[in-house]
Image (cartoon, rainbow, N blue to C red; front, side, top):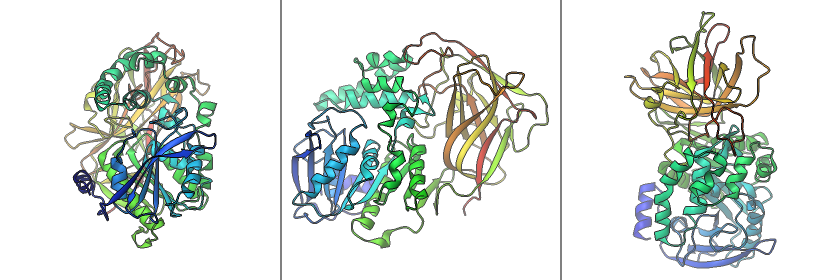
Length: 550
């Protein structure tokens, strides 16, 4: 066991290593059905031919004559590890077209495994993000010897990652494209460091630039077909997305699946949908959700630990380590982990109504008039902070954003008891806008007892693109914003806050207010927004209330 893996194991809280004597096979050729050859490394305990195999498929790991760090960590715990580079990456043949070839290539890799002299007849898969997507893409139709999947911060489709609720996820898209096609492809360590150092400046320039369709040329210095396709294909049924969508087949996965997710991860909504799909066909998927964003170290640590338990059960037959209930979630606010039979738990749908003067109450306003107004200027877009972004996501203090004139807030009285919510949060708003094309963004926050901090919990956005048919005589329309799932306790003396604005840039691309294509639009129009909260227009945030666990 090397010093670095020993230190990492201690920091991550991993189970103890069982061996430090490893053997390596480098650049093993893996033929695909079309004749393309992908490369893989094998890292395993010496004389470990009969041990279970963990397959990791990814587009990020550069090739070398020594095993990668992740393979070392896993192999030291008694597994054979196959680290394969996806098509078109790091010496593997073919063209890298993100997310497109992973099903066929994954199935071909399974076939190759069973023909190897060290094949043990027991295979699991591991990985976060793209590593997790490839598990689900090839999981249905996989051979029976594929016995354990552990996808972390990932899902079987990616539309919702790059197009959240149809709105272009600017931060996630540009950051991922830069890291994948600029930073990670550098051959030398020095060039990789230089590319990483340029990341922040490249993103800053790109986020400000119009039209968005030319941002890749400005930030990456080349035209990215993947970036362009995300810009041009805005509907999930478009062929571009449909070819990468495996969600309809998830129920056919036979291998036991343990999902690991985060409340601030942009994959979470689709990951929960995958969990539900398996549950609906009688399978017994497990899911663990913590207070993590996409790349948080605690999330990575938990993913490794839960994966080792999963492999222990299904690759080694040690059922004694299996927890009794399949759902484990962290209730934020009190940092308490609870086990549940399923997700979401039964909850009371509780409405908190927006009030004149910025209040939030369980009582509908008795006033027949009452509204709040703000002006959204896309030339000075409301900024995003934390939440479901690629880097620097998670819970952050929103007090500076809430002080802006283009953000309005509605805050409850201090809680007299600990108040817990678990499940899907949504917002119903009665709105009127001077613009046909505009966005409405909502974020649920927890306000500290002294009122100085407002910490984001969950959020959502709706894009209005056509003249509505469901307006009343005064042009007021009702919209519903999905804030997705969460588990949170508003502790005694804390307050519930709903934040409303018309953007969160660059998490989401700013709506220019004109209706032009995001690919070409440069002209901007200010939008005057009005949120109604009166007896006839009872705008509300809908919270799934549950009993606070002891």
